[in-house]
Length: 196
Image (cartoon, helix red, strand yellow):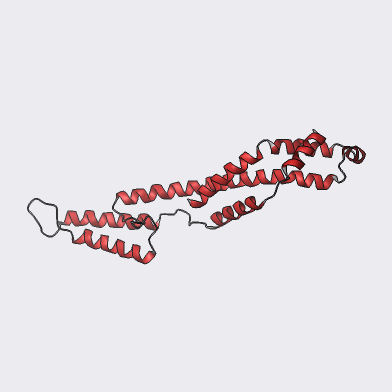
């Protein structure tokens, strides 16, 4: 979720800084490709290729934004599916995966928490009005059925095993996007005056 939040904030910031630059960049490239070398020299452009490469940096940044949005949508779908399943299991009595401080429990601590829950569930006395006593066969069956259901659902929590490469790839794209340099505002304004 931290990655999704960082990507969302960075995408909003980048989209705001780009504004209409991608549309203008496409028009600039078309103008550069449709002019002769002599026409470009009279405009003050000595190297068509370098100029196009600088302009394409804007389009590359836009592509980073779009790629991150697609990757994060896929990740969000997986996160939502997991949250739905785990919430359902919490409703059936599965102990929480989170500590009182709001952090994910280490595996060993969570195993202890689950074992304590199972022990308490199986050793709890009946809820009959007559008082304490061993659980009836039907009550024991219900408790065991719930435990087997939870175990089955945990074993099949992920229909497809999680692919952490998606998260690494999204994080890597985010880093590349943050490091990507587009032309300066002054250079960009001069090119708009020159070409459009």
